[in-house]
Length: 301
Image 1 (cartoon, one colour):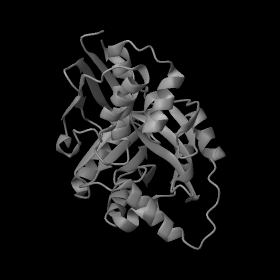
Image 2 (image 1 turned 60 degrees about the vertical axis):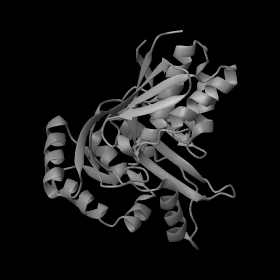
Image 3 (image 1 turned 180 degrees about the vertical axis):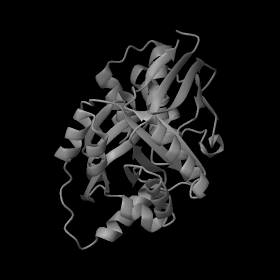
Image 4 (image 1 turned 30 degrees about the vertical axis):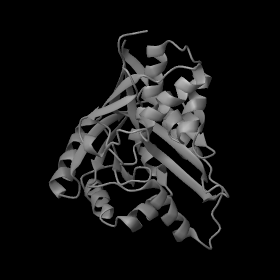
């Protein structure tokens, strides 16, 4: 066994989130185009007498430190599969916004899984790790894979997507979170009595990712949950407008929100938009990040 293993894992933005009608199990079929972005959490696994979770960094006080945390659940799932006692201390160094629609909790689950696999020497295959990720949550498999991918089913069935260049983003972090189940519930309310189409990936968006064309990607961005997020948090419209007025190529709510995402032309434009968003008073922080980013990977062992 190693003395300690640290795994770095990226946040994500949904460049397309097409949502189908509610299924009998309560989930929704999705065409979810994930893009990993360069905002990272790090999870460090060290041997301990029992399973313990600690957390540091922005908004750390909002992170649960019990067995509901996806990092804890990942350690328990791997230990059960290999007949290991889950005696591990998992420390989360948090930099991905909490409850912000950027899969921070899912990222921690994927990172903990990779860290425990390395710490315990279980030698789990990539397919085994992905299967455990899918059991943990819809966004967890992508946090393991990174890059760009199309998620179907409830988002857990991944098909990698080629990305032909770098994209530059600004993320405006809102005060407070938005409950993902509540946003989906509002989506169901807003679409009640309508014919919700089957979700499919946009050919134009996939082509824009392959070519690395920021302008084409900006024209193709979409999020079916955005009206629901705006219904629950109308103030997000002011944030979207502030970023657009500052020169963003496109703006959208990230996933279920309340973080808003702004695609920009280059690093200089990113700094300009981030400064304008902070000055607007419509968000509590603005973060600049490139994409794509590598999935969960060991940085120290």
